[in-house]
Image 1 (tube, rainbow over the protein chains, first blue to last red):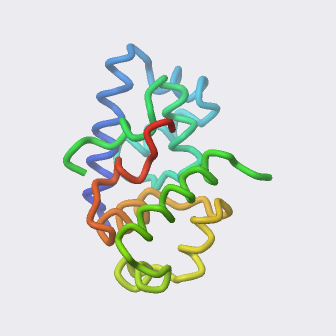
Image 2: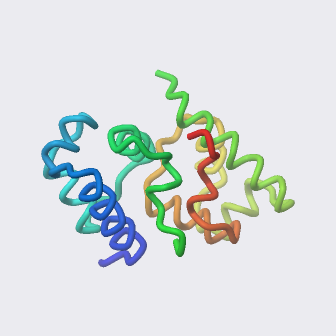
Length: 72
Length: 72
């Protein structure tokens, strides 16, 4: 079942990651998460947990709220 | 193990919920989540998933980013 909120979150994350010039593997290394997990989040198929949202925000050096696009 | 990010998220959620004049039970009913789950999130002991973060934001009629306090 496709969750459009997760898909939108994933696309926004991908955008932020690319803006920082990081590969999925690099982001995974910094956030201590597997590259395939990052990939799954970006495709909207992984229902990421709050603790990992904070890890990703820190790895990207953004506030956690910034991971959510304004329209969400 | 206490995760300070989850604790801060929970306190902020509690504040938003009370601002809307909702009990944990009422928020749970609107978001289709159990009251004990809402309670656990507010105490920082439940590592809520992204899909449920969106459900809670919709139930509170706020943008998902607003669930994250500015300093997080």
